[in-house]
Amino acid sequence: MLPDRATALRSAAAVVAVTVVGLLFIASYAGALHQPKPHDVPIAVAGPPRLAAALGGTSALKVVREPNAAAAHRAINQRDVYGAVIAGEASIDVVVAPAASLAIATLLRAELPQRLRNAGPVRVTVVHPLPAADERGIVPFYVAVGWVVAGYLATSLLGIAFGTRPGRVRLAWRLVSCVALGVLMGVGGALLGHAIGDLGGSWVGLAAIGALTVFAVAAFTLALQAVFGILGTGVAILIFVVLGNPSSGGPFAFELLPGLWRTVGPYIPTGASVTAIRNIAYFPAASLWPALAVLLVWAGLGVAATLGFGRAPRSDAHMQAAMASAAAP
Image (cartoon, rainbow, N blue to C red; front, top):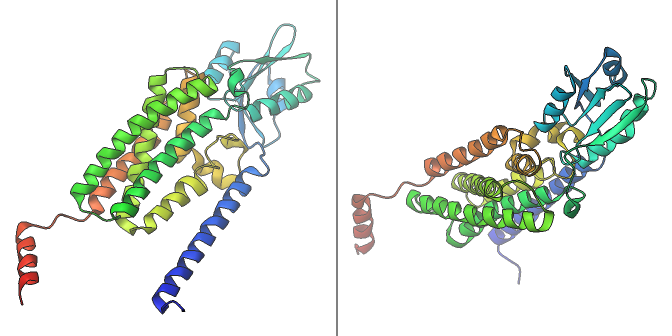
């Protein structure tokens, strides 16, 4: 038996929508991660002008001049740069920080001594190493992805089970439930990150970042559902999964990604969360405020749009009129 026209159209629309999302998923991940190349990777240089000149002339590196070795190390500690070239009395010291990006640290260790070979003997020093339990530095990425998935999955399931456009009171209660989910996921993710990846820093700080990440994603997904209905779930997947994961700086630092992903990555919750986790775990001198600001903006926009676009509750007069109309013969 053939389906009716409406059913056939809805089925065709679903197939097309899934096809588009799937192809965008492939294009985004493959486009972002298939061929990482350095773009303006910031490197501190403390020494005579010839050192900066030896590293110039390319778009791969961005030379940041520092007055001395202490300032260069401080720039690494604050995550303003990925490494440093420091002129010493007997040699040139190339300093790399794998915890900031293993791929960039590997690149600097391989490339900088070659570029500096005419300037004198070169020594490589490692600071902020990765723990033995996470030699590839990938645990912060997966922890952040878990928090993001929990945020949009919870609100998606609520929308499927109870509708995507309830009244504002119910939406407010959903936001409260997202706070509880954020706390549980934040604590759980922080503890798992410590246990599996030996993440350093305060687990309370990590848990707080997790709670904010989950809530920001959940609140924004609720807002999308309030505006677009069930299609809002698809929009959330496009933002947080298709675009957000490959641009997060997790597998490869932002400076190794192509233009679009490099530009938007720090401003999507996944990227902000990955940055905050690494700062707490490995770079206590680095500021958390840029990442926190991103998460707070997404959370604030999500709450405002959810309550703003949610259906207002019907007044008693309207309810009574509706009941009387329904009871009339």
